[in-house]
Image (spheres, rainbow, N blue to C red):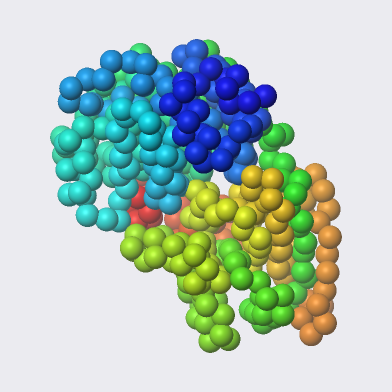
Length: 424
């Protein structure tokens, strides 16, 4: 199938062709037709499947066929959990709407709101936003959502994990009841299905890949290693392999900073990206990583979604996540658009049960290696690491372990709110 057969306009086909695409991905092939028909869609799609184009292309076509109002109120709202993902989607919207009379904008926290407010005042058809800044601008009467025709909730599972359910509920009350809804999620938990039931009306369900499967082209490997030898092993792998672009995941912000310092001390250019970093620092780090001036980017799970890095060859889990689904999202940064990739996990004794959970989720046993000089400690306990007093959900982005479960599920704890505000 080609994009020409999906019913897209010549202007959109011209933009798609300019980007060098000719064949739609499975999620695009399945999602675009029902969206063009005006139906609500509930889509399951892993990272790297082309889902962003799956909703932006038909959304832009629907808006372009409508009447452009003089003051350009927001007609399509795309809600996403992180700044990086919001920025990426905005770039896609701009590229695909190049030959259309459509204006778009992106808003998120961590930066001065004045330029964003000025852009909104000039009129915007498509708005990409994170929940915190969106609600802030609505509360200040700088932004109205009263004319929204299409509502897109992207990375819905991540939204819930980061504690945005209350914010989503507030936003739903600000947009018209009569609208088209599109909801995309990599996983479908009971909470996601409950959220979908409250937002979508007779949705068409589409699925690109089986839920929680890992991309086949990704070569996965586990190195069993003593906890205290992980840093040395990372340096050895990167240096001896002459790896030039590596994304490394740590569990905490403090761990990300420490590992970055040690990499730099060993002569490897590196930068950290996490929720405590300013938006300017995060943007600079990502730009350096993409242009090759920075070899290693060390990140917490805030970067597990929304980073579009073409042909990223290596992902390293310095610490594997205790939430199995996060493993899928992390390694999904490589092996994108059909390219091959390598995902390496450094596993110490206290992460043994986490590894077992991950292997159960993805339905495969990951090959294990031991590097001479970096052997696991035979006397180390296999008791799972304590996460805030027990084996619970770790705070997203490596925040304080004091965050309560209620905050990750949309509760009103102050610690949860502060974490979200920094991210958005």
